[in-house]
Length: 390
Figure 1: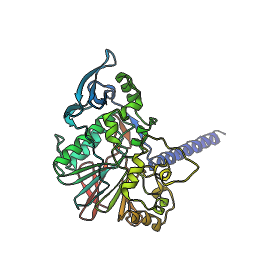
Figure 2: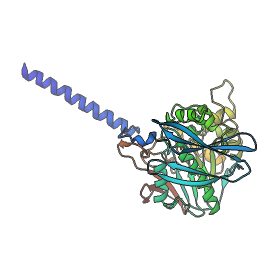
Figure 3: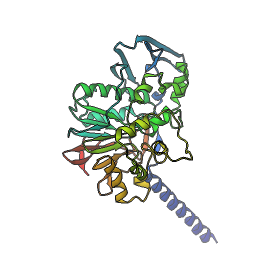
Figure 4: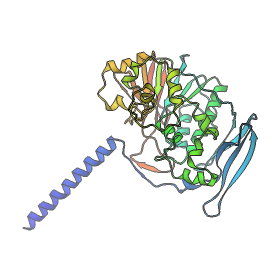
C-alpha cells in the first residue's frame, strides 16, 4: 500500500513538472516573460516634462512637474510666443540623463517616399523604454554618448509602438523629436512611423498606458486625452506623421498590407492622408466596406495587420501589395518575433522583438535588436553594436 502511494505521488509530481515545463516553453515561445525587481525610481516624477499646451494661436505654456509623493507636486510653468524658438529640457531619472532641445511650432508633414541609397537602421516597439532606446542608438553609432547625431546621411526608421507600457513615454517622444532636428541638420532623416499604440493614445484608448500618466494628467489639471490632443504640441507633432513610407524601394509600416488593399488604385500619399485624417477617430466595424474602413481597421489596417505571420497568405498575395507601391520588400513591426527574420522568400522582414525594460528585470533576459540595410544586404543589429547578416 505504501509503495502504491509513493508511486502515485511520483506520477503526480512528474505530471506537474511536465505540464509546467510545457507551459513555460509555450509561454516563452509566444513572448511571455516574468518582470521582477522593479526600481522605485520609476515613481520619481520630479522634473518630468516638458508638457507643452497651446493657449491660443499666439501663445503656449511649457509645464514641468516638480515635487514628490510625500511633500506634494507643483508645476513649473513658462509662457512663450508660438513664433519664438522655445528652449526646453528633458530629464530621465533612472540615470539622471538630461538633454536640451528647441521646439519649433511650424510642423511639416513628412514625405511618403525617399530615394537616396543611404544606409537604413530600423527598430520598432520600444514601448516607452528610453534607456534601452538610447543605448541601442549609442552602441550602433547613430548617436554619441552626448546624444549627438553621428549617423550622417542615414535613415533611422522608428517603426511604431514607441509609447505605452513603460514609464518614460514623455522622454522617448521628446528624444525622437530631438533626433529629428539633429539628423536634419546633419543631412540624415528620422522616420517616426506610427504604430497602433500611438494611434490608440490619440484616440483615448489608454488600456496599455502606464498608470503614471493618469497621475501626471491630474497634476497638470488635464484629462489624459489632452496629453496628445490638438491643443498639445506633442499631439500636433504626432498627428503629422505617416503610417507607411517607401525608403530606397523598401516599404516600412508597423502592421502590414492586407491583400484587399491591392484592389484599390492608391498612392502612398493618399494612404497616409486617409489614415492621418482618422487619427482621432476610434475605429468600429461598419456595415459598409470602404477603403477608409480597410485602412484604419483595428484588424486589417496598415498599423494593425498581422496577416504575414498569422494568416495563410500566398507569395502572390504578398507580392501584389508590394507591386501596388513599387516596392521590392516590406519591413514591419507589431507582431512579436524571437529574432529579426525574413519571410516569403525575403519579401517580408519582421523586426518586433522583446526589448529590456528600463525599470525592471525580466526572465528571460531580453536584448534589443534592430535592422540594418546597407548595400542591398540585411543585418540583424544587436544591443552591443555587433551585426549578423540575415
